[in-house]
Structures are given as structure tokens and as C-alpha cells.
Image 1 (tube, rainbow, N blue to C red):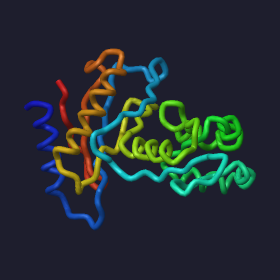
Image 2: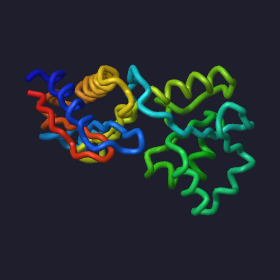
Image 3: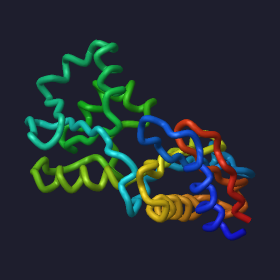
Length: 209
């Protein structure tokens, strides 16, 4: 059975499961093989055609912004307390920062943001100007981006919600799969299989070869 057909069938099967009282997340799991995480660390943002989920975004800026939850320079000293810092990092999915104050951000927040994989990055998250247009565009881009950070031989990323159309979920899966393939040293040989699941279901395996 073709790869696309397998994904379509997997989504149909998942939808036959028990009805839940919430909109379940659709997760894509990519299992790798013959691949060294240490030799080839992967850390990339993939732009997907359909928004997978609304992300909670906060910004480290010189001045307050009405468009986004802001932590201004004057408020940095609040976060010398590790509990307050951890609470902040858990509350938001994504952080952006003004380039000018990035060294300060790294000093105050780096010890928690770094390990959590939420440090503002030049790829998607560091801005020169904190004007409305820049912030709005970046927020939109973040909401249609999926972060892939390979730390072990299995990668799990959210690709959509149960309420989305199958076609839209499939387009997101393909965008992520193709982008990851480009970054693997041995292309499809590095992929053992992929799996698709809803939040409360068991995964369904999809064979790529």
C-alpha cells in the first residue's frame, strides 16, 4: 500500500476510536535507525501549510507590547527566583526576543530556557525591531511552524487536531517528513517507520519502504 494511502487509512482508523470530550492532538512519531544523534544533531523549524495548534508565545522586549505577553528588561529581576522562572517557562510554548537584549536574556533565563528547548533562536525568534508588523508576522509564522529537535532515535511532533480535515493533516505530515528526510545523512535508510496517533490512542505504524 502506498505511503499516502497508509496515512489516510490510519487517520480513518483513529477516528473510529472512542469519542473524547476534547479536541485531541494528532501526533506524528518518526522512528530512526542507523543514525547517531551525537554526530548529526537536528534542530529545525518546519513551516506547515495548516496551523497545527495555537501556541502561547511570550516576548522579551525593551518596552511593553499590546500584541504579545511581554517581559520587559525592568521585570527581569523578578526571575532570579528559580520557581518564578520555571513557572514562566512552563506557561509558554515559545519565546521571542529583541536582538539588542538577547545577551541579558541568555544570562537571566538561559539556564531554564536552554534545557527546555525554548531559547529564542536566530532561526525563528530573534527580532531587530519590536514594531507591530514584525511581531504580528512572527507570531503567525510561529503558529504555522513545527519544531523538530532530535535528541533520541524517536521524534514526536504535533501535526494537527482531530477536528481538522484528513487532507490538511496529511499535508502537514508530508511537509514535516520531507523536511526531516533532507536533514538525515542517509535519507529514507535512516527511517525505520513512522507512526500516527491521537492523544488518547495507541499509535498506528506506517511503513515508508
